[in-house]
Image 1: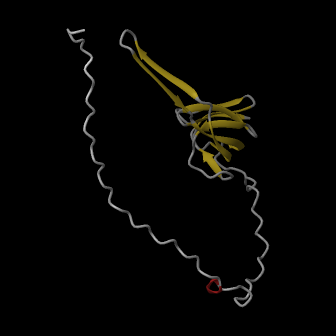
Image 2: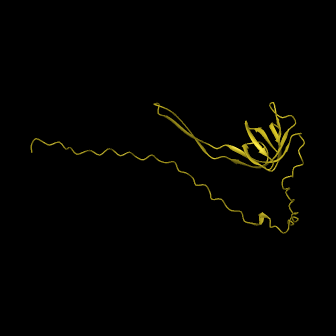
Image 3: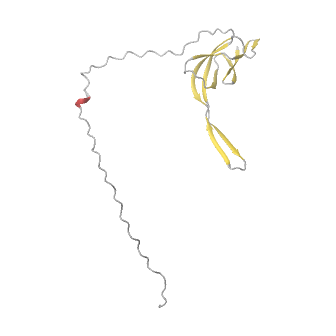
Length: 171
């Protein structure tokens, strides 16, 4: 059995236990979701095609993880205008695993994602007497701020006189 579902403006042919990469969906990793835009369902020789969707058909999926696609470079230019722009782009994606295809809209109970085991009970907090209060430690002294003196402007020197390089007529 397989189905064609629409999500993110694209169509995907899916079967049970398939893993597909779709545009980013707003769902937590490990959560189950239902894809209700089913365009076609095929079970052996029986094919149901929707107009535009198959009535009551749904596909169950589990979010495995969120990821990002490969980086693509977008290059724009205009000839004879010295106009060039390069920009990179990475698409946000979601990895889904198809858990069930239900042409009648009744999904089987999906296996819940691995339930987090409750953490072992933490030991009781130590009594306050065992902890040394911070007041016993000497406080670190802060260095006094240095007084900044106003900078005095430097006295300007008179420009040095240049020796005359002109040749005298006497010599």
